Image 1 (cartoon, rainbow, N blue to C red):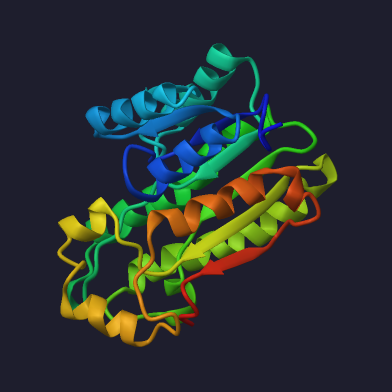
Image 2 (image 1 turned 90 degrees about the horizontal axis):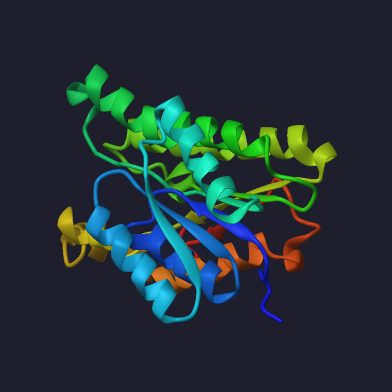
Length: 248
């Protein structure tokens, strides 16, 4: 039997990159998946089609997780479509690097609203429906430990995600809801390519500091989400899995 047979999952920001890979991996293990997207309907529809072609179940749902109504509607869609909710993957995130002299209110709020407030609002909506055995997985980043220059705001959001993960693990533990985080290193995604990170001097510098000597792939992260969502991780909560090829 598949590890997640009969489970229902929401993956935020799942139209591409890590989120899309996690959505496909959860579905491959038997979960019905809500594929959330903020702007790329075509990308989300492609993920849903790929899941369906592989024999899985998925529905694309639009929503800006930084808005309370959208976060609640996303959870309502899971209940309406599949009748329950077992897994929440808080993957939605944005990033923008800037030196301290160039940080603006807009730069700050855009990243904190999606990366931190969005996680809280979606989790708040989900907790009302997650029962014993529920799993919340927060996608953070190794930047919270590496703390690269020109990333004060983005790194701050991921430091907040790590702290929130620990706090919610303690708060929701009595309800038997587990809360864990995955902290990827540099992953070659559509976003990293669009930002001209892939193939850049920045990528070369990061790879040079990575003991395994390469950038990560989506396939390096998705199985970890499956593990944390499954009963195999039933004794894990408040943990952070650093998936960075050894980069610290």
